[in-house]
Image 1 (cartoon, rainbow, N blue to C red):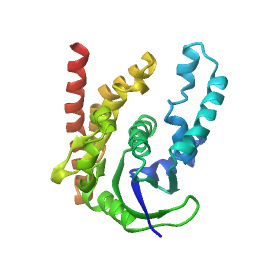
Image 2 (cartoon, rainbow, N blue to C red; image 1 turned 180 degrees about the vertical axis):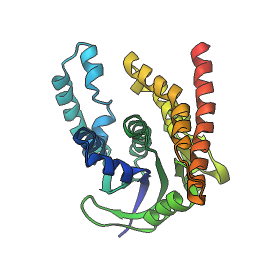
Image 3 (cartoon, helix red, strand yellow; image 1 turned 120 degrees about the vertical axis):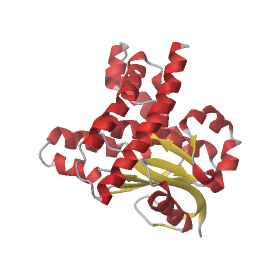
Image 4 (cartoon, rainbow, N blue to C red; image 1 turned 90 degrees about the vertical axis):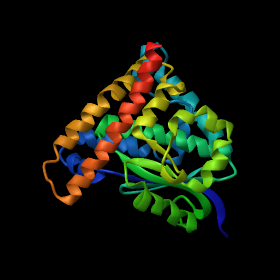
Length: 274
């Protein structure tokens, strides 16, 4: 009965606070709807061909509606070749696909980078997640269960600890042999005990060096976010005035990510200057 599937489990950190703010801010609610709507399986496929950024498209002189229609047609074909299932509930997201379909697995990695960027850019919130491969039943608007679901949840909730998506060490060796991995290697960082991790810092490095930054306007947006991220994180950390154990734990997580940004930005800066 079980299928052998690749599964991503994500917990959106700080989601409760954003929801509280939407109670008095209709524009924020509308923007949040757009981000959450992008997590549907149809829209993940659509964005894999490139984000429909109206500002970028109009700046280039192209017709936004015409491009949107063309990409929607391409997405229909995408859904056949790269099928994936999505379940979204409250602040949690599950995406899975046939583990044998390597290209779809790496499309999900690509989506993680873009979701990391959008959640930070628009709401200054982070996410934590776990990825594994194993036995799973996952139907959209239907059952979701299996040992792989338990493992992905445990990686997110018990092992990841910091704002990062942690990739199960059991799937890292075969993953590193893939041509897709070589092409997207900047997205991944080695973590402890043989795991791989994706953070907001590595996501921005990837986006800066990938097809998504092909337009100068988007490249500059990614670069500005990268430049300002450490200061923004320091500001958020400084706003946590309590010194109880829970607050200090949160501060430690921000410090971890600030250090990641220091490393990633120095590498990006050296490439720009070089």
